[in-house]
Image 1 (cartoon, one colour):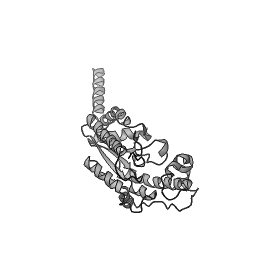
Image 2 (image 1 turned 90 degrees about the vertical axis):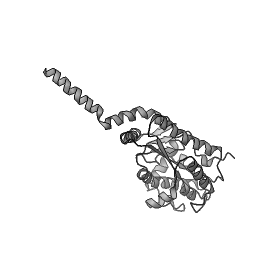
Image 3 (image 1 turned 60 degrees about the vertical axis):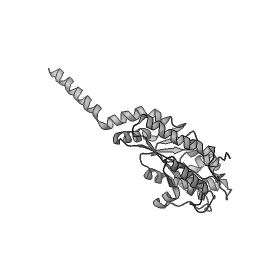
Image 4 (image 1 turned 60 degrees about the horizontal axis):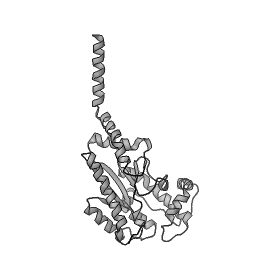
Length: 255
């Protein structure tokens, strides 16, 4: 009788453990993980950030949010490369909705402030390309917001490109580790052609944005148009990161 009572108690404990909503959500997250992982070519998953974000939304029965950037590269209008990125965003939303009843939400940050940094214009609201991109996204029920507005909200400022390179800063330490990669970004600058200086200030700019992204988009997946190597040290480690098959289309003109 005592052994039967012990077995009954163990079974009761097992059932309660299995019924724990947090444990159920975690098991669901582990099962769902491969589907989300395979959206892109690479991932950043420090401290099981993927699983934690998925478990959070399974527990709360909420949409799984994704956030990405749409940059500025001096293009005049929308072309097939832009359409390719749009199709990828729609595919992500469709894939999640197929296997998860609450679906996914996608927000796109229009990187008008990066356009200012690269010297494409002085007024972040003056990009005809991003105006057209915003309209295209709205037509497909994908919300967008301005990076310039996020800068104002969080009290951020662009680095002054004329400032000298300071080897005593954290930005310089990050830059030194991957400077050959970051110098490629410097090639997009329209005014200053000193790749060493531009790349250093590019790193400063992206590091300034890291905390803001984590605060503004908690429990969200970050979509990145590029490789893991090209963004080493620049992105918030608190966010799960998906590196997409589609690169930075705003720098590719197919017209």
